Length: 177
Image (tube, rainbow, N blue to C red):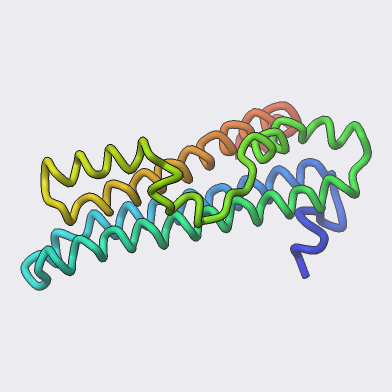
């Protein structure tokens, strides 16, 4: 039900409410990305228990799940912002334009494109090269790490846009909190 109305709240300044809700959602998306990194960093703890033929593919799967969840969250945020923008007047929309522009610059792709090695030849080549240098089982990890980096970049750019808009519209009292 909250997704239907987007980021709007019934009372208060609508633009401030949207920016605060977007900021909260950006933090959640970044947390999803960091969870993927953290789980993979824990992999050496399981090295005595699992052989590399099992552990290394699990690391790649962890990156794939984390990146997929982050991508889903990013585009859910875009839909909620578009729903909110439809209700706002022109001056309020202009204040949120830098944030909306980030979503326009990063259009939604299917995960089939992100995970298709033939559509990402540069990432595929780097993954193969890394796998040849270390261990063939590391190739999928490097590929999924590249997918993770793309999602991390989306949230980095979005976070910068939210911070810039926040600094322009928020009262000085709210910035200090």
